[in-house]
Amino acid sequence: LLQAPAGDGPTERLAVLARRAAGCEACPFSADATQTVWGEGAAHAALMLVGEQPGDQEDLAGRPFVGPAGQLLRRAIAQLGWPADQIYLTNAVKHFKYEWRGKRRIHKTAAQREALACADWLEAEIDAVRPRALVALGRTALTSLMGRPLSIEEHAGQWLRRRVDGLPVYVMPHPAAVLRAGDADSGTREAEWTRLLAGAGQALR
Ligand code: URA
Image (cartoon, rainbow, N blue to C red; front, top):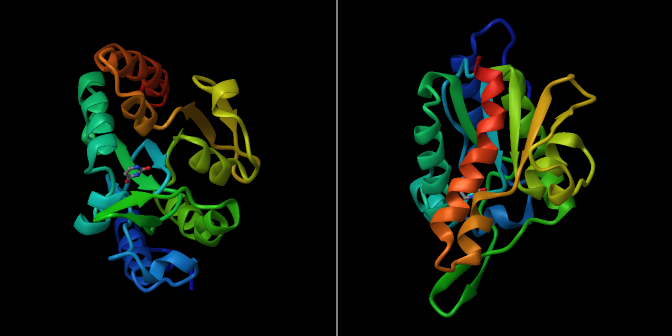
């Protein structure tokens, strides 16, 4: 099911995978989410950025990184001058996991075994795009990409290498962490985060 037809180009393969993933019920929270949120961007991208999971706004829009954390990420990419035709954005987990707090849906981090249920989609996506490098945004993405739990604090700004395909992985804190601190210094923290992300630009040269 997860194998895209060989022989087709990345655009066709991604379209086939996205159609199949739309009906996926492998994780327990797919039933409560509005829809599967597949990746978006250049099918031939050199750099694939991997987040955790769609949030409230992504779940409703059906697109990754359109809420507050996503806007921060997109601002950083624009500021770094990374060409859109070299960038692909996706998530380790493709359904929104949440709990109701009053009338608000509050994001809940997917457990490792739940992220594992989605790992085949991410691997199929990587295999279709064949980027030069990956960026792990936060712990869930890093664990999914590396196949084992690793500390963001310890590895932020470093390049690691995946055993399965040898692809380099640049480690970043999740953009939501910049927003969560939420104090008067948020501009400075966003600038620092963007400077750290700049290191991944090596893959675009
Ligand atoms: N956070 C993520 O990790 N991914 C999104 O798509 C949005 C917010």
